[in-house]
Length: 233
Image (cartoon, rainbow, N blue to C red; front, side):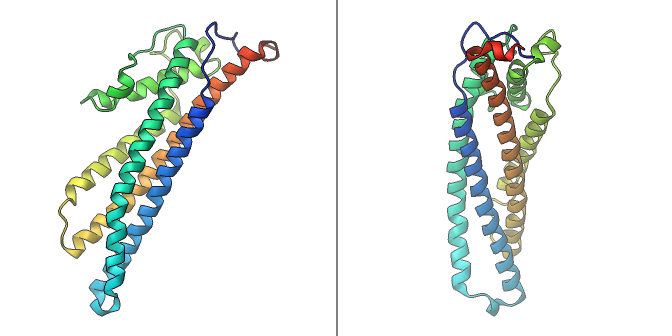
């Protein structure tokens, strides 16, 4: 059973949700390519350390070029995805404010600053998404007396934990292997890079699930507004 349509019409979100998902897929695809470059790097270094004559110099130079290119490409894909995700998040938050009878716990500027502010970045973005989720999920408002007391989504928890584990690992890698010169250290950097890319792909998959689910929730509410009699049954 669906609630009555909101008094203020919800703004369309499906297009932005699709765009956010596409960018998350692009980012994950870039990470898959980086994964392949790292695997090749490890194989070449292992062969070279075992027998220097077994690896043509051209193969090492080609891998070095791909490795050097992968960093900037990953950075561009990451920031383009982040911008698209934030655009979708602002639209989802605007709709969630219309759907919720209670104020959200964080003001709109925190949708951006919450990701960068020291300490509070550990939980502010998740609180924002939690409140959007609760406001958007059909029936959730009727189950609780406030957004702060609402039951939390396991999917949002999984996404947030994956995001933070990935962030800590990738930041640690950039510090730990920043000046790697020796082949064993370069090999270790590539090995840890593989782990970082796998974590990033997993976090992107969970983010896609969160975006699709919240988008579907809000789309259902919009359909109620257009055909209220068929949803009220």
